[in-house]
Image 1 (tube, rainbow, N blue to C red):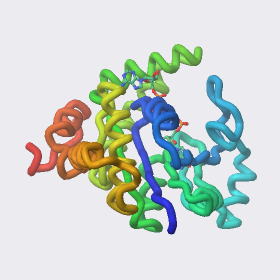
Image 2: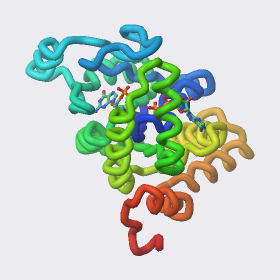
Image 3: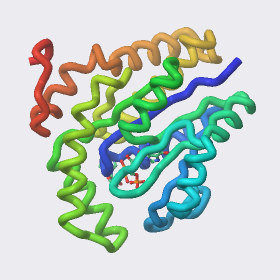
Image 4: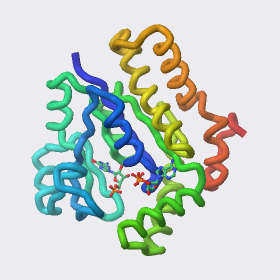
Length: 237
Ligand code: ADP
Ligand code: 5GP
């Protein structure tokens, strides 16, 4: 049986890496895809741990050879998921989590309609700006024009939230971690049966995951859309 493909997308600085890192210690049988990129390592990043860092020439050769499940240009650099990553995870009986942007997510959904997609939102532009500044300061590279560019891109990305099956708002980190963990557990229960959960736990994760489905998320999403100046769909006004 093939594994479950999870996709998570979020504007840069929303807390996706923080959330995914916590998930690593909480969820077993879930592999975290290491993407290829032409951007240079940041902070304490290590080659082949956070990314496979490579040159534009090599990346373009991989595109020509059809090695990518999806690829996209983000902030002037190439990023892509190798098909081999997916094949290896599924061959080993593991599910796979892709941390990719909205362009890559659209490509994967077109090729793998069963993929479970999750969009993580920051609570507001103010909170996002603070997180971006804090992270840049910690890395010793604070540039206001970079922060402004990422905020403008965040708005564009949030406009795509309706393409995703589940929506999380990363306000309180522990809550977002609990919700993300519940989504993984619920999808395993729905697709593979019980997946080891006892009755009460099963009901709890199914209920929590259900509350994160896009169709159930209107009340939580509306203030975020308003804060970013993204038009609020008529049904959620
Ligand atoms: P991303 O991977 O989405 O670009 P990061 O995980 O690097 O974002 O998080 C950006 C910054 O925000 C980091 O400094 C991180 O510690 C902080 N952060 C993440 N989630 C939260 C949260 N829920 N509350 C407060 N700070 C957070
Ligand atoms: P960062 O440079 O901050 O690590 O990532 C920038 C953006 O690139 C994030 O939105 C991240 O999700 C996205 N990204 C990372 N890996 C991939 C990938 O393999 N494919 C695509 N399409 N986007 C990716």
